[in-house]
Amino acid sequence: MIYCSHCGSDAVEWKVPADDNRPRHCCNSCGMVHYINPRVIVGTLPYLDDKVLLCKRAIEPRKGYWTLPAGFMENGESSEEGALRETREEAHANVAIDDLYCVHDIPEINQVYLMYLGRLTDTDFGPGPESTEVELFSEEEIPWAEMAFPVMVENLRAYFEDRKSGNYRLHRGVIYKKDWEKLRARSRDKE
Image 1 (cartoon, rainbow, N blue to C red):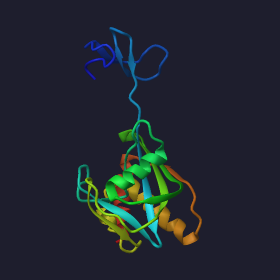
Image 2 (image 1 turned 180 degrees about the vertical axis):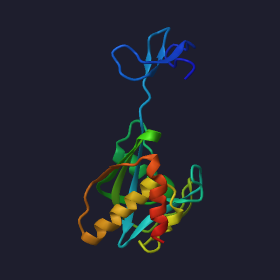
Image 3 (image 1 turned 135 degrees about the vertical axis):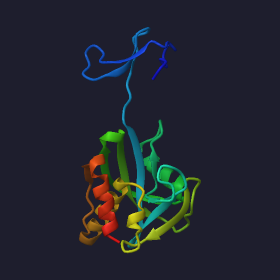
């Protein structure tokens, strides 16, 4: 940050403000402390019978790789509303939400994922502007080695394990960058 978005001054400094414990962008002109907080990503794990709906990304990052429909939560919407919006935008899919299903923190990239489990209400789906393909996959058909993000692999892994037991519970976890390659390798091993 170079300029203060409150007063426009270029007197912004990276420092620990009084009564705080970590550095922030602080304006030395007006005193404004600019907090930068994690981004919330919301989405769904859409299922129909024994299959899940995946989208092939038409945009970076990870263009050409598969993912669950998800994206940044917008101001003025609940996390569930955002998850449904992202599912309609990326897959033109209609989903009836069952419940919040997976919560994953990724501290090194300042993201929190809130993924909802939801039943597809029809099979009228297709690619939106951020997807090139949208398909239903059984566990055996999922292109594990072509998954875009480790967090989505974790969501799918949880779903297929829960499906076997019939017990769908809330899954929570922290994914560190140092574990990404291990998670990608695990998904490649599934093929």
